[in-house]
Length: 360
Image 1 (spheres, one colour):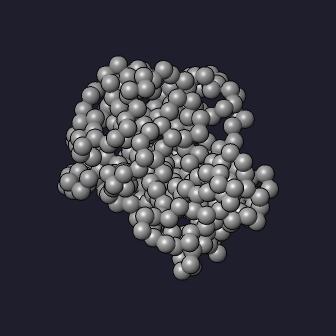
Image 2: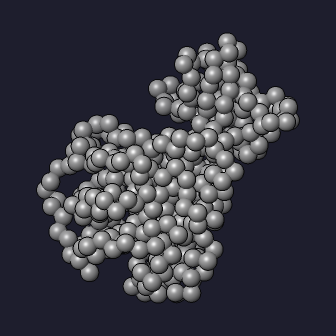
Image 3: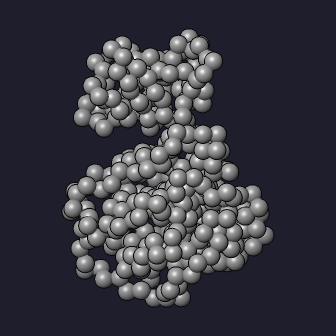
């Protein structure tokens, strides 16, 4: 067990979390097999290269793994204004009454009250459209509120499932394919509502989950509906000025009990992905088991629940780079990233993973 003494007096700025990433290391497609990705074991002072399916041997009987069971919506819809201008919607949240909150990409914004025709799936003649109601959640809000409609009056989830596209991250350059529909989703995805996959969990297949169970490791689920803000780089050099995006989360009663039981038996809480960390630590900090979180975890953060973390490799200057640096010590993370780049690990959503333990 390595002991790190993080220098708590240091003030970090945005440029501390920048690094040079050769573009060819950004994974454009998943590994042929989920659990055949590489796993960088960063739990010791020197990095160890492993394969993801080696993971059960690195866990202890009595540990608790916490997964995010959110399900990615086919949240990307394409459309055309009455003037013929092209438009793209990325639906971040389903609000009720057939209303959605969405990001809009368009050269000139349509007027409030106007309706745009959306592109329906081939062979479907659904009269799919979106009517702009204004900004969300309020007048200066970052998102737009639309009513989605079709002839049958279907709800937004049904319409996205039928006509939407997999919301691949901005750095994946190909159009979504049937492979993406399957692989940009975890094998246990359940609660619909995310616009980005909890990517650390993409490496788990049924055989690996069975091996984890056989090892005597417990499993529990939380839900955090990952928003598109997860890909936004932090832009303020002074981290305190960054406005964190809001995401909805839930820690079910069974998971609350599983965490208490794990603590009581001296097991470790192993978060699968930064979204599980954000959920567990939001609950620990606020006492609220469900709600919206804007938690922004940077070095100096006091972790209350999570002991170990499985996570993919993150974008330079992202809030997730800050989170892992807060968790496992900044210098240690930078050394692990240098090793990963040198050893040609694959980065980001479809890339490889690392295993970290909390710096003492």
